Length: 317
Ligand code: UT7
Image (tube, rainbow, N blue to C red; front, side):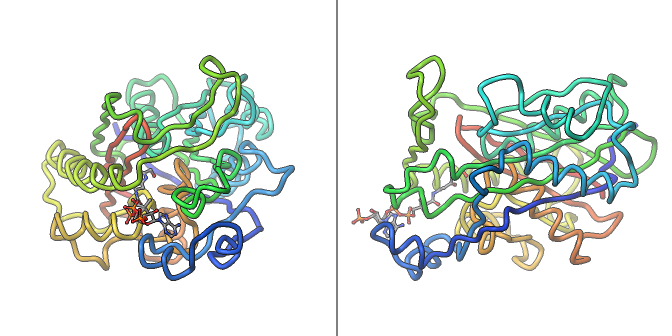
């Protein structure tokens, strides 16, 4: 029994914010952003667009790609750090909007690692027979928690959503292994300085960028090796690497460290920026739609985010 990815979908808000526009707001330049991060532009949600709206658009596309309908879905896990409201879960609104009237729907919060954590969680539900067809979504409106005067963070993030339909079945396709890890001792490296219980405010993203960078290269590499080891697969047997898109230099650093051919690494960071929990399914959707990732390919997804959290998932498409 495995949980197979039957379909992938994504959604990006219409508005594109370029590096040059940001350079008019804060002391930065297109050259600095491109050289240090690889990011050229990012999408920003409209004022009336909520995380649930982005999530629904991605979910509808994933259902269509999977040949499934709302009535088939009996589990929704939405990875987000930027929910519509403090409660109820944004997943509940998504469930209602999609017309799903059975099963459970809940949010999962592991920041940029959220999609990998949600995929592993849904896999466990499906493998145990507690659900049959899951929507696993990563959706974020990080623009709402940006400090637009902090050049160290505001140039990095963007909004978007990606989703997969995961269904339990027999066969080779599906999630083969996952590895999840949290080390809360590093929670001060990347956090939001507001929240319901601590301050009663929403807060803004704060990050010690270079420290997170060092942790990212080390722990992402470790997670990838661990997910492969759990499956008895060598890293060079993997067809495609779909990383969390935080910084092109992190993608390159990990590829160098693990001796991975850079041509096998899907990169969308230039056009999406860091969309937190949405970045992995967004990149997956791009590579499935442009024909790089094909049925039967072995795909390794990975991420690291606030917490710190990190993880990897090995999937036969
Ligand atoms: O998705 C969750 C995980 N997040 C990440 O993985 C992000 C990890 N970190 C990074 O991607 C990088 O650390 C950054 C892109 C955030 C920063 O790049 P860096 O090469 O690590 O730069 P730095 O933080 O060491 O700063 C170097 C200099 C500093 O100036 P001084 O102190 O040397 O004068 C910064 O103030 O670069 C300056 N700087 C900027 N300059 C122009 C920081 N941001 C900017 C900017 N434009 N936007």
